[in-house]
Image (cartoon, rainbow, N blue to C red; front, side, top):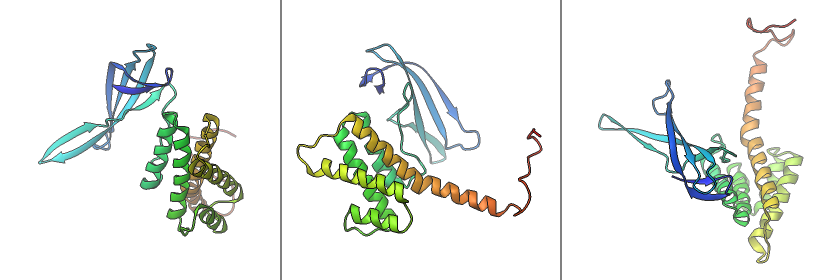
Length: 219
């Protein structure tokens, strides 16, 4: 099985040692296979996970395992959060894939494209990334600190896109990927979670302490 070895930092044809399939008893369409592999170069273990594509054809259930296993040990592969909009998730996943393949220049470019996609999905016009980010800031979608981060990412993305001799180091690419991920998490995940929290608070009595559950101990 072709996998990325975190120790060798290379793609290797690893030898399968054993595997186990795990199914969700509450959802027939959710299944995973975990496979323990041995790297042929360093002999270190690699654990990967594959999701299953399951469908029904003529009354018969068919299943196919994902051809791109995800490393879960050691140093798990980073994956774009499934809660992101699909097109934006795919774009950022490509940035992560480029980074894992040590294509740092390409990773920076894909992060810039991810920010462009963020602006489009949030209704900014298409006069350029600088204008789009400013509009998101003015609308309160990204606050001042995130706007500062996004501006720095935009400037570095411009260098990667337009300067022929510009080179993106691993350290720079790490920061670019990390801050892009933080912006996405704030806009699409934490904002929604806080909205859910606000709804929960609205259902509580306005006065008095928060009641403890029957199973919760303490003074």
